Image (cartoon, rainbow, N blue to C red; front, side):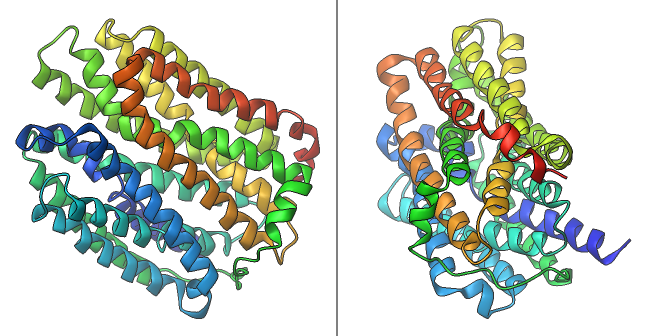
Amino acid sequence: MTPKAKSIALLVVAEMAAMSLWFVSAAILPDMAREGAIPLDRQALLSSAVQAGFVVGALVVSITGIADRLDPRRVIVVCAIVAALANLTLLIHPLGGNAAIATRFVTGALLAGVYPVGMKIAVGWGTRDRGLLVGTLVAALTLGKSMPYLAAFAGGTEWRVTVVAISALAGIGGLLVLATSLGPHHARAANFRPRAIALAWTDTTIRRAYIGYLGHMWELFAMWAWLSAAAAASFAFTMETIHAESLAKITTFLAIALGALACVAAGWFADRIGKAEVTIIALLASGLAAVLTGLTFGGAPWLTVALMIVWGIAIIPDSAQFSAIVADSAPPELAGSLLTFQTALGFALTIVTVQVVPLGAELLGWPATLVILGIGPAVAIVAMWPLQRRVRGQAA
């Protein structure tokens, strides 16, 4: 195995393990809520706090230049281990209390020292295959975020087992980064520069990629965080609640995990047919799946399972390509700042969507709420459509 293949393989496993901390509270929420009544807004905060923490953490990492001044591999290891320890404190905090929400915020902030820093290590191994490299890292992120749902399914109603298992996975897995090497293209990434904000608006390609990314993020984390709850509500029309919740957990795991495979394939195709083209195909498929899932809500469980899995496969492959388009189009000295700003905007939007979705489900019902999520991909397609010819030449 070449040094590049070995390093990317180990980095993928480490990222998957560490990022499994993200949706722990969402995966075990039904079991926690049964044990202690948690108000709906507090349930949402357990997930949206992670998003908020990640935004703050990403800006801190970029502005301070931690990943540049220190070995990025050590940054990932420390952040992964501390995040795992923080996650363990869910075992001692009051369910849905301020301390538990604060813990989720801290976990999200620490994960900003895992995923973006890992992305920097990955792109240091190549330039012409950047779409594939970034897509592979996003695949690891995606697979990791599915793991709590698998653990929750295996653990049944014993939610504490899931917390311990995922914390152990994240802490031990993060150590694998120490066995990786830095690639020949590894270099300092620019700290955040405020003047990049202006370029994000004045450069047409970057602006459209930003809008496309925001449309993608409108749908993505709201779907990942609440798919299990929506699935359980749909299945409950035809089966007992306990069985509906169990089927919902494994459905959510499959939907998110299979999306990871699509990321790798999308990265390979993006380097050949065009990054914008890949985003449009994925956005169209995910938007249609969202609408169809809403329209068939409460119907035959097999149909809901199938649609949700298709939705999960389609919703993530475009993610890496928005970032790749920005990186390809930005001046080298501003690329780091523009990518940081893009990430901060996208995750800031998810704070709102993750928080609002359960309230929308309560007021409008799950079918209408799921259909509304399809608005994001529609807006993104409009933004990305003109870029097909413009960025095609960068796909080689």
